[in-house]
Image (cartoon, rainbow, N blue to C red; front, side, top):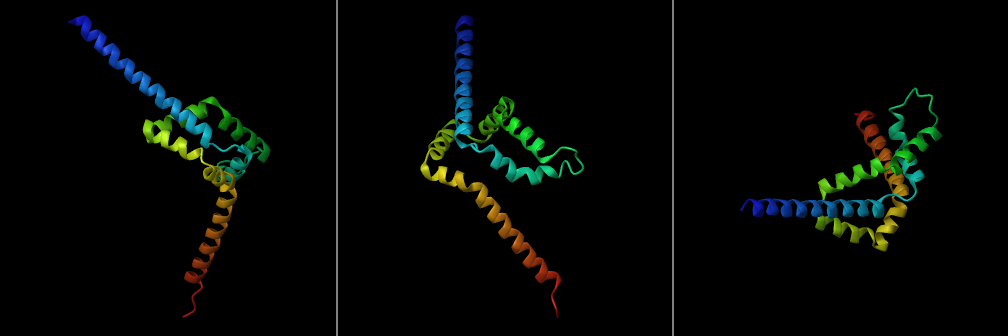
Length: 140
């Protein structure tokens, strides 16, 4: 009976490890398919955000860009992203997401996302300015 119990525990733990391994592989695959190919465009789009952390830094823009690109390409960062995907998405959901990112329409969206974000931010900035002007420059 003890041997059966030990074998059962071993078998169940093997199934869990295999499922976790599949989950991780799918998360890595999703990341590789959905990640930005042009890391420089990505970095340029987020650099203004990072600049707030280095206001008086002697680092120049090129040094920061290179460092961020190195991090984005690192195995530690990719593994961390895969673990986040595993927390957020089940195995079946990752399979669906992988199918989605392989569609030509997704590629089109990816190719235009940085320009789209830039235009949306410009639009938002204009709207904020208009609303603030209306709020504070009212003449009664």
